[in-house]
Amino acid sequence: MPKKSRVKPVVVPKEDWIKKEDPPKGVIEGKSYGYHCVSIRYSVDNIGEGPNLHVHPYDEVFHILEGRAEFTVGEDKFIAEEGAVVFGPANIPHTYKNIGPGRLDSLDIHLNDEWIQYDLPRDGEKLSAPGLS
Image (cartoon, rainbow, N blue to C red; front, side):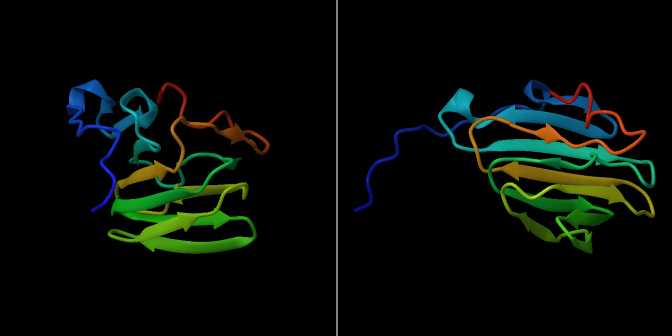
């Protein structure tokens, strides 16, 4: 028999973590509930928009819910379309941008109990996702 979990199931209503409705954006850190992950809902309508280059000290999983994104992970570039899952390794600079047509909507799961991000903005870029958290 598996060991009993130390945490209980939790349902967090949309209005408690989605900060912007259209396009939807929000962050929820698992540490508040005893879980070891962070979920980020990130959506953009503008072609070419997305987080700037950044790095995390833990792995990250991206699920493309809608649209198409061009990812840059280290030296690698590739396109992920609706339904795709991308695994991003810890300590590798990465970014992704909406390549359209239409909205890019993703659920990004950080395998850590709190969101830690080091932005590496290039010329002309601002910090990623202001007001998201």
